Image (cartoon, rainbow, N blue to C red):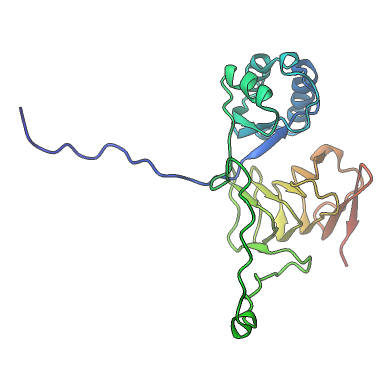
Length: 250
């Protein structure tokens, strides 16, 4: 028997990935899947092969009323890859797990809320020192992620808890997502999703507005539904109720 050491075949490392969440508002696959399919027909390639998390927190149905297996099969047919669940009751999580959807938890999150730390007196000299604020280039009061390179087709960028500033082109087939506002100081030709954390006040700004799809807080408009939007010109997009409004910049 050889004592030669075999080369290392793999390594395991913890990772932190930004994933989109499909928040279920209706427990019936026959209601969810056709709506998703309709969105796909209007925006080809949107979410194709994207890994997503099934959000259960908004469901009021009993666990036995949710056809998780039917939902998983339907999502796979739409070329969406469900990888697990977030939120929901323990019984709901167990029902989903039987269909191959394990409960997921953010990296570093506690299983149970930790008790608040006991207050410790701070000497006056130390109390005068404050942490430096995070840089903000957006004017919204949020931190901002800055992307200075073109966003290529097939690339997806997510500014979690922040605005997103792109100083180059967002190419067709690319997707940019932000929990806050999106600023594109170039051509916006791909897909832009602002207010991804349900911020209906978020806006999208582009110096050359020619997108495949824009969305704010879950409300979408695809290229064919942009109406009188100033295509190819400086544009801002905002929500007014449930209607998307397009206005020239400047």
